[in-house]
Length: 236
Ligand SMILES: [Mg+2]
Image (tube, rainbow, N blue to C red; front, side, top):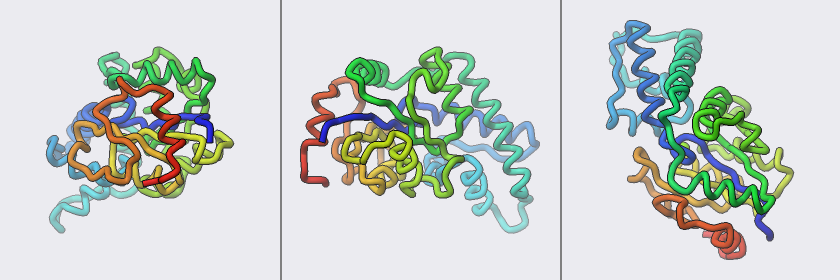
C-alpha cells in the first residue's frame, strides 16, 4: 500500500516536552500549597499513567491513607491551571523540536502526504507546541488532530489513533505512526499501524520490540525508508 500519511504523538516524540510538563506540575502544586514535588525519577515512574488528571489521581493513590486528597473537581481545576503554566513555559519559545522532526514533516508535506497528531495531551498543549516550534497554529502544521480529551480511553488503548485514522479517512496500512513510549506503541499497534519509535529521555528503558523501527532520532529517516516499512508485509 502507498504511504499516504504520517501520524505523530506529541509529548516526547515531536519535542522533549515532559520536562516542561513536570515543571508545570511542580509549580501548580506550590501554588495550591501542596507538599508535593515530582522529581525526575518519580516522574519517569508516574509517566506510566497517561493523561495529566489521571496522573495526579495515580499519585494520590500512592499517598498514605491519612494524607489529604484532592476531589475530582479540584483535580480538574488544578490540571487546568497546570496547563496554563505549561503553555506559559512554552510561550517563552525555549522548547525545540527533536532532531529530524521539522525536516521529515517538511519533506512529507512537499510530497503531498497528510500529517496528523494522535496525542493524549489536550488541544491547548498542542497549540502551544506548534506556536513555539513552528510559529504557527496547529492546523497550519497538521491536517488532522486527535487529542486525548476527545476519546473515552487514553493510550495504551487504540482509540486516539483510530480517531486520527477516521479523520484522515485512511486505513492503517497507508500510514506510519511515530511514538516515544511503550504506551503509545501499544496504542498505535492496537489500531493496526506500523510504528517508528524514537525513545525519549523518559522512555529509553522501555521495551519497544513491537515497533517496526527504533531509532535515536528522525534525522536519517527519509520517506523512502518509511515506504519500505509499509511494503514489508511481515508485520512484527
Ligand atoms: Mg509520548
